[in-house]
Length: 309
Ligand SMILES: [Fe+2]
Image 1 (cartoon, helix red, strand yellow):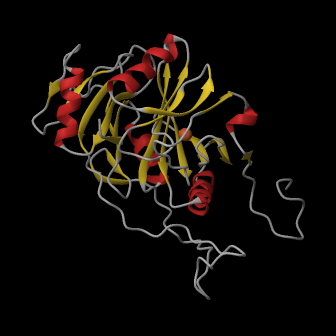
Image 2 (cartoon, protein in one colour):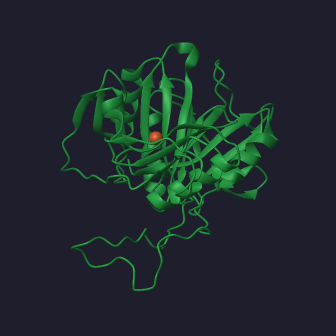
């Protein structure tokens, strides 16, 4: 099952203008009405909550209506259709997208990915003992850098039955576990993506079922910090971060959003292949991050101690 990762996340919202402002300020581009794209055209789509084209909602407060997975090619799509048709209704739309429910009743869809290949520079750093990353006179701190999300990275679901949910993605769709928190969901990687995870899940009571957070990859830690600082300056609420996770090694900064999910910037996630052996650790603050910072007001020497003004 050559699944690459989430291509598009569809939400039904009753606060379209708040969501539009948030997603634009976050750095996505509104390519068409309600469709907010990263640089590679992976996207978040918002529609009015009563739009008849939306799949039905879950009986909880979550606003996610559909997760559209991008696959490598038509053969991958056909293989998924054949597999899932064994025990559920799989619908096919005019553009070839197939859709159904997963084993926790989330609406899911699959299509040949609409991602465009990016050819962009990595964050360049100078590190003693290594060849300089930047040429002489090339500066690293650019206040005006665009800092745009590059691609949809991963999603995290709240689910009432983590075992059943992970089993569906592993047994039916070929995801593999990279790492695991004991008694919490595994980090899952699909077959056509080396990223540490594109899917994670957290066991919760049934009434909480929904999407917990989504994340887009940034160029690197510097653009993550820059984009997050801009969100703080615009008055958005930092939920968690900035910091760096242990499992996956990705830098993170999460913001509360009007889509009723946390929306994360991430950067520099580990990549894995079939030679990796999964690690397991208890879920704890110590295991959830290598370090965690709190953003404070900008400061200059001579003023009151930073963060104390
Ligand atoms: Fe995340």
